[in-house]
Image (cartoon, rainbow, N blue to C red; front, side, top):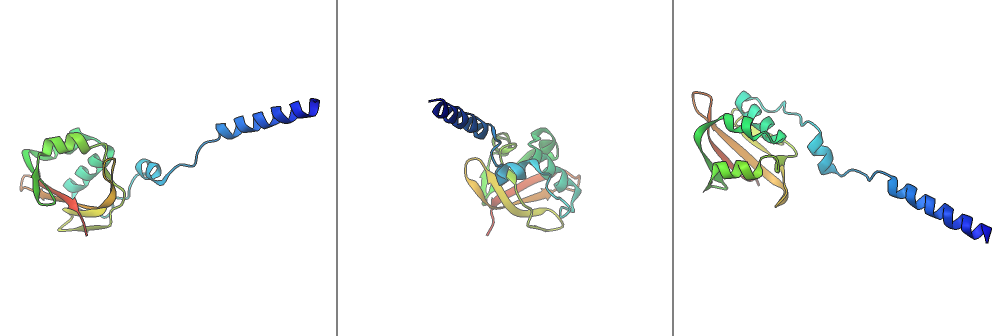
Length: 141
């Protein structure tokens, strides 16, 4: 009788220990917490916008744009302010694969809470005064 009670108590203690162990972290959490290497971003304005986006800092992101910027999603016009409000802080690049057009076009893997992971692009149009007037986003091939 004493041995079976000891076995039950030992098994119970082992199960508590297993429950207290930390789970293995998933890659998305690691990617979100790790600072992405932005050395490929050569345009200072785009780099500031990208870093603000990645941090979910919509105030800084919006400050880099003109008062009424245009947004096109796969060529279709969208409400820029609504997009930023809904997506900034919830969607982010997980990689930067390619940068083109004097540093204004970014291609890479992107994560959204709604649509999952896919390749995308952000193409920034910058005015002479240094403000962004248009952003084209979409799924990259």
